[in-house]
Image (cartoon, rainbow, N blue to C red; front, top):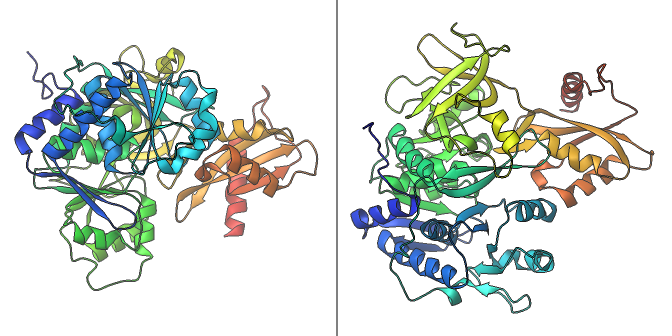
Length: 524
């Protein structure tokens, strides 16, 4: 029998194990944006989860049901997630910055039967949810809602029963559908299994040298794979304490690190850069933080300034939603290379191929990064065509990203093959922005590209051909704000007469990328 560190665990049973091992220990310490603190031990939180699971069951949530969870960082998000896991129902987390147009697609496409949200979003759901025959209930967590929309309040459905609901959930069952921006005009729903989540929790914990003594502080949103699989699940898997912050604030960051005696975190370039812009203080390095996971390139100067000033070691790496986050990373102990994504993570095999699909054996030669092993997603929900494009017959996941390997076996990120813009840690599909632009009655066609941005990695730059000259860039931008999350709205819009195209009618995007970069340089 091949070694298997999962056993037969699911996400719910893994948490039950940790309750038996670490019951009286702090599991979650939550700090609201107002600074209020709420704490739960493993035992207390398990009772919280089980009571909610029984309550969900009583109102009709069944095994394999899909449930939208639309909440900011809070214990109730984790409660809902773990309760659904114990019921064998499927979490569908949504971005709280989404517009209703974006949510509408996910609600319909995911076939969700229920929504769990918080009172601040009551009016948005109340104004629209009656249009969905598939949604049976909307449950409001945190503040009690008004009776205007007839929504249920979480506290009112909490059952007295605090035992595990005892549903026969299998490791291979899907625990979550996580929608991710890709090369298509609409997000794809990546199917993530219990088995993959449990494996990644343990593998990431081993890679990052976690222990029950760790107090891992989470600033990134729980609706992303990063916060879920790089920090929360590994912390739980190793019996540590989660410090959950409702809202990131650069001015509060280091105070919160010290206050909660945090030992580990995960940040993105926007956090690094906003911290560097804070006034220097003599106690910037006075904390218990040993290191932080980090991804995406920064300048040598930024990296050195951050590590020297805050004395927080950055561990660079690479991952995708489809790999449950970490796939390649620098070792915690051993040779750590800057601006290098590192070595294959536990359970992961990496291969580079050239344009002909042949394996690259030469050091420092760029090729597409392919991944295979554990954990890999189970496919895209209701999208066999895109699944086959992503995972070949040999089980290799084609990332669409370009990298190379040095003689030490360390991998480096080189470029993106996909049409993805990285903005402040968010993935933006250029096809999705183009779809919204092209839906405007006054726009004939569009092309969206990314340009470098000193603070947020990349900015969104749109070229558009309009049907008449009465449509201004501000008009287009205001239209986009109604249809897309704010971070997807083009920062730069250039109205042109027509596009240059190839012989088969495709817009010459590389040409417009160069034009956008030149315009951007002239403006900054």
